[in-house]
Image (cartoon, rainbow, N blue to C red; front, side):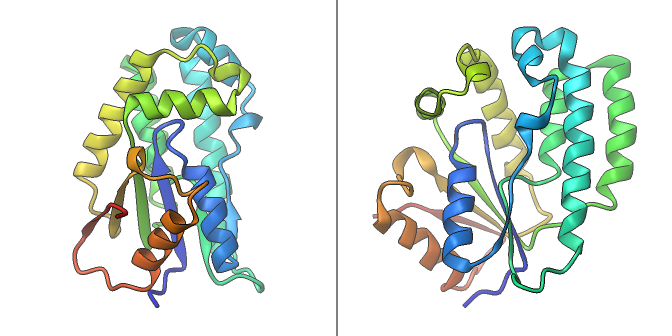
Length: 212
């Protein structure tokens, strides 16, 4: 069985990363680390006025994610595996889209200092998805501040995520097309992911999974 101490699951808003993190942590009896997005006091305002509240929203997320990820260095007596529904580097993807000029320059200075001290995952699972599937998932979970999310913003994020992971080399990477998989409702799909990730050797830096 593949041994990973820190697994991070990533994807655009609505890709299913939190659901998969919960399901895998349950199967592995792992410590679950979920992004605390609801504690960001600027998030609602950001979706109402991105340009005005982007900087405050981004810095709040950056500080929260850094503080939370530092806990990964603290060993847990009851869990040997950590599973997170984000990687620290994702913060910069959003910053590149939502900030510019002096705000982006200041953000980058802070991010570069923090990233040196952030833990690096032993494995990253990237849930790639179509815009239609993302919008469908967002509608199903029905978070109030996401109800009027701009599809163009999702497309911009999706392109940015695909570009980022196309060049990602910090950890072994597994890419799953979540538009063609339902690991929440289909136990066979979840078992397939579990088997491929944990019981089959990873022969390359990047692995693509597609359930039969």
